[in-house]
Every structure is written in structure tokens, then in C-alpha cells.
Length: 509
Image (cartoon, rainbow, N blue to C red):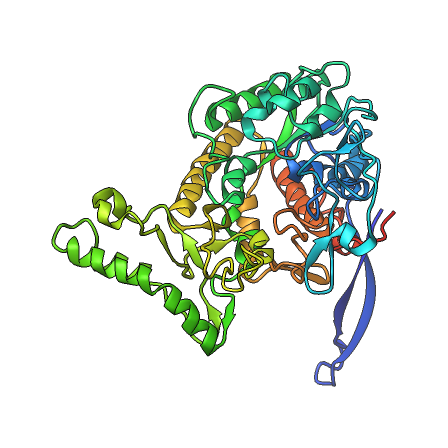
């Protein structure tokens, strides 16, 4: 039983000497907090579904310690106080992160990031080569698993048969993280593996990747936004509805969370639009190189004057100009600009480019690309200056609008579906907004969305730190208290976020 100490001010006034000086005494009193209770929730068999935010990815990778500090694992430890059972996770084999296939590293599934003194760097840059031991062909763990978070999964992927079949990997139809979970039922879906366990309580946090994949690729079209509508397995609304219907069919309780505004996470807010330092001589040389292009823009404006096909405003936005400054804007491709060559073949050589503005979002990996040379033998071939940044490096306003519109639609579905099913609802969007606009204080710590220094987001700029996951876990418990009458907060059983790290040492074993 937890005891909370408070100071009570006791004013003792003598009855027979009411005009005498008042005497004050500080008395320490013990106030007992109520015992923890589950309310109407049954936590005996807790199963959690979702994507990387459920799996526990941190610093760009999944590794043992990040899984130990995953959101559902933190929750399961608190649920154990009120009748919760064991919680099994598909633990990786090391703290390096990364995945291998038959002894060979899987491209794109690299070891974790670490702090290199100035910013994120690959683990191997700090400690040298490592052997990734989590091999999806050689040493998968045995389920069933309570944590069914699959990094990279979109809403409809949770319904997809064969999504964990190793044979589908080369076809692009399987997820290597889910391959580790399916065992002797390789064609079972995430939802099937969950329902088969007959959970008494579940959590579902999915939908982030339905917009995040598009955002991470700069809206270049290689990872499109999931349609709002479409049959289950295609559209978000129907897929989400099918998930909730199946999970609640046998009377399970649960908690769901909506989708944060991904445009506010540090992956999109850290790199400024104007990071290019130039001295006067270099600026003059670059401007000379762009003189022909700028002249072509003005010629096109004159030729198309009065047609309404090309405006002065757009022409002004497309003029490239650098100066002696530490804060020159990068040059970017922008497919929303008028294709002048399609209007008049005389202008076919004019690319759809402009300099970025504060309305554009530069993705975090661009910080390692801007300023490098496209041609090592040409000192003027600077990426982001002479060479415009390709679509994948930038989210322009129209792409941001697509993401925001889809997020709003998804979140309307999540909240209405949760309400109709009587589930606890976590407004993760509001929580993330708080992190971006001043921060959230919990205990002795204030977390913000700043990369590295904010404490809430890990070095990949997308996923929370362990401390961030702990903060979110408290919000989940608060929502559960409100819906099911449990008392995690009133009984003093929110987690202390200070007990969870904001970063992991490169030497973590």
C-alpha cells in the first residue's frame, strides 16, 4: 500500500484567550492511498496490436532493451498489480538492433542510432562493426506473443494473410518483423494471432504508418497514403472497423489511441529550410550559374503574360538567389509548379524548382545530404544548392495538406468507433501537440519534441524514447481509469517517467 505524506496546517486558538496570539503547529499526517483496483476491466490476458509504436522501436531500431521499455510492456507491468497476467514479447537477440536473413543483413534494417556528440550517428560509427544476430530465417522466437506490434505495419496489414510468411518476403508481401512471430502458422494475420489468444483486454494503436510512410518518403509517391474508404484490407475506415469488431466480439475490453500529427515530430521539424552558409564569392558564383535559368523564368512570364497560365507570383517564387549569409534557403524540386515546357516547348529546359520557404518541411536524413557534392570532382555541384533536393527530401505544403486531411479523417473514425464499442480512448494527437508547444511536465521532468534535448523523441526523430513511452503509458492508464473505473492514477500507480532513460549507451550489451 502506498502512503502519501502531506503537511497540514493546524490553527489552535485557545478558547479562553481568543485575543491572544495564535499558535501554529506543523503536523505531519499520513494519508493512505486506496489500493489499486481494475474496475470493470479484466487484465488477465492482455494483447497489444499495432506498429512500431507498440513494438517498441527506438533510435531507428528494435532491440532487447527497447522492447523491455515498450509501451505495452510498461502497461502490462502496471496491469499485473490488478490481476494482469504474463506478457510475452518476440524479443530480439541483441541490443544492436537490425535484422539478418540466413546470416546476411537485411537492407534497410540496420543497427540502432546513438548520440555522437553533435547528433545521431550509426552505432557502428561509434563502436565499430557488429554482428546482427536476430536472424528471421534461423532463430525466430516461439509464441504466442502478447505484443503483436509490427514495425512498418499499416492498418490493413493487420488483416493481411501471409504478411508473416517468409516466402512472401521477396515479393514485397511480407514484413520481416512479423515473420518472426508467425511460427507454425506463417499465413496467419496479426488479427488472427490476437483473436486466437482470446484476450480479455487489448490495446490497438495503428494508423500512423498509413500517413507516415508517405511523409517519410517526402510524398514522392513510393509509399502512398492509405485511402480513407475501401473494403477491409484496402481502406482505413473499413479495416479499422473490422479490427475493432473482431477484437470485441467475445466481450474483451480495450484501449485505442488516435494518430498524432506526424508533421510535428522532430523528423520533420529539425532541419531548417535555410541551412546553407555562403560567402560573397561563392554566392556570386552560384547566382551566375542560375542566371540562365532565372532569365528563362522571366522570358516565360513575358511570353505567357495575360494567359493566366503563369503568374508573376509563381515567377517570383521560382527565381533562385543566394547571398553572403549563414541562412540561405536550399533549392528544391516542386512538382506542383507549372510545367512550362508542357505549355510551350520553348521552355522545356526549365525545371520545376524553387528555393524552400518556412512552409516546407525538410526530412531529417537530409541533414546528412545537404552540402555534399553530387560530383566529387566538381566543387560547385553542391546538393541543395546547385543540385536541387529531390522530392523525397522535402514535404511541400500540398503534400502536408494531404497528410493532414487523411489524419483528420482517420482520427474521426478511430474516435467514433471507440465510442460505439465502449472502449477507452487516448488522444495521442493532443499529447503530441503538447510536446510540440511547450512540453509536458511529469514528476521532475519536462519533455518536449526537440530532437536529442527534448527527451520525448529518440534519435530517429519519429519514435519515442523509453521515457516518452512511459509518458504515453500514463495517458493510456488515465483513459482506462475514465472508461473502466480502474484507479491507476488515484492509487499512485502511474509510472515515474524518470525511471526510464532518454538514450542508450553505444556500449549497451
